Length: 72
Image (cartoon, rainbow, N blue to C red; front, side):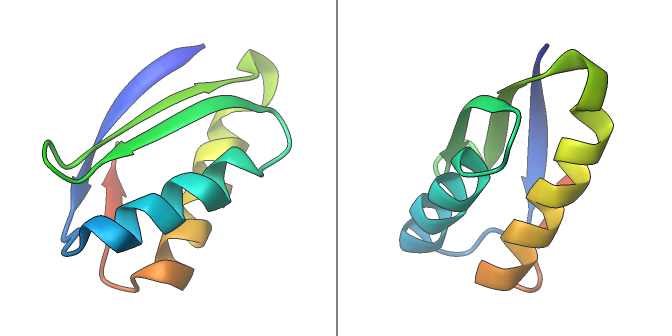
């Protein structure tokens, strides 16, 4: 499944790159792209675990930038 999410309170391009790296390491993620310019996360991941993967992605983002949230 492929889905794009709006990111709220993403303040730094370097943080966006770190988030992208962390999300791509999550089991079941085929590809994740975090764009600082558009403030969006595009996620391609396993359909069966998609919601759980989004939850893990949120935790990964919070480790890099605690104020950043994924708007569902």
